[in-house]
Length: 181
Image 1 (spheres, rainbow, N blue to C red):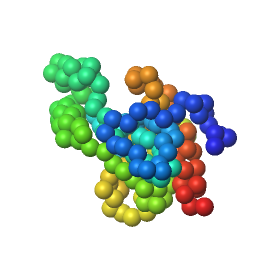
Image 2 (cartoon, rainbow, N blue to C red):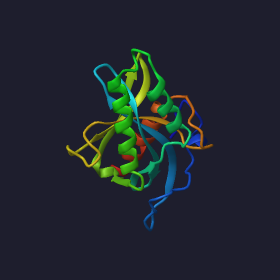
Image 3 (spheres, rainbow, N blue to C red):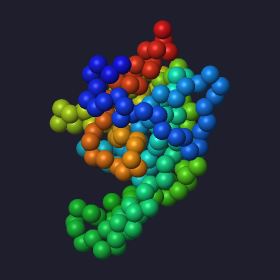
Image 4 (cartoon, helix red, strand yellow):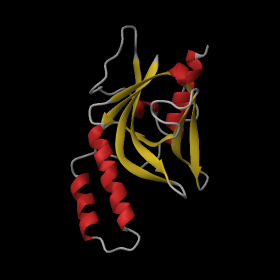
């Protein structure tokens, strides 16, 4: 693994799980921070939902991660005081609804056995790998048929702006290959 990785594999070493627990004979391999994306007419828009993703030898675990405390006041200020025409009422409403979704999801996690995943598909924007979509074997899946996200490095507690989609897809697809052997 790591033949075509953009960043060192050590960037994705496993980190502590907050909600889920490993089963017996289960090994935790890699972790990422994911920002959920929502399909728009053109492209995608980040939602207020984030997940801590954990690759184990048996499954992908997605733990809901509360959005950083500093983000909400910034968004509230933008919503209240923005006169920018591009930041219209519909955008403000969408942001409010996203925050409500995040609150409902607070202590939830998803356990997805690799047998349910067909592949991790890269989505390119301007020919650059930007997002990853989980393609499920069975539709509809509990997570939805369109689960698209932006992967980030899970360490240091800070959201970094480097795009890690190709690394996530490579690690995920290698985990799937190992299961299908």
